[in-house]
Image (cartoon, rainbow over all chains, first blue to last red; front, side):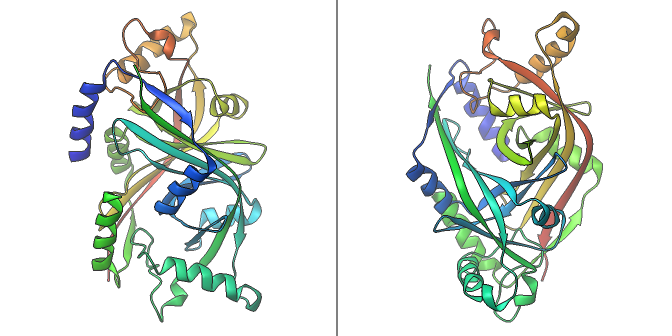
Length: 165
Length: 165
């Protein structure tokens, strides 16, 4: 509610202005991905999209995530084409949003994925993941990480808006 | 950056706890949609999802939005199946997220849509839309609202998480 009040107050100031939108460079997209740990992940089954918030860790052209078993994992196993959106919409006078098109790659608990799982778990341990149910990757609790995956970034675009007139 | 610092500080407190997730009622989903004016909209073309942040106004089983022409409008005209996600992730100790499955319905500038467009524009005028490029719905600037649409809500589910142990 506090956020809404602040926003409405700011909006009064902004009435009568509009936003000028610019494409941002790939470097700026990467900077947003590096500082953002929440994204919305969209996947598809039979032409029906599904979108949920997830934790992400950006590392060398991949976004690492994990999940308990559920609809999105099931759908991404069937169709690895995904889209992620990460943004910073909070300031009332500008916003930045990055859209990533990519492929889902699961990192199962198998010897050939051991190195990649170590990379993923190293990233996850930098940030507690309070928004995932029973999934904090604590030592000795590895079983909680049901599914570890990464999204290969095929292409990304970003936009920044600032106040115009 | 300030947000990240605050979050990391809170996360230190939260390390070692996990979240308990509950389904929320349809009424609670509606309450979130009523107080939220930003959602992430996912649409699909040829099994490829696309997700972007949009402005929404919830009114009687529909979510009203508008857009300049672009990829999402093109895709939703071809395939009206969409998914929206709205949430409040900001508090570190709990979150709430609502996922809506629905259908895209365009409200073109035609006599038979005049009443619905008036409803939509009445909703939009309650909130300046600073995040849309050159789209503030000011009197005498109707041309800026390139495409007005609504999403018929077919089904929605919501989840709330709070700290467990």
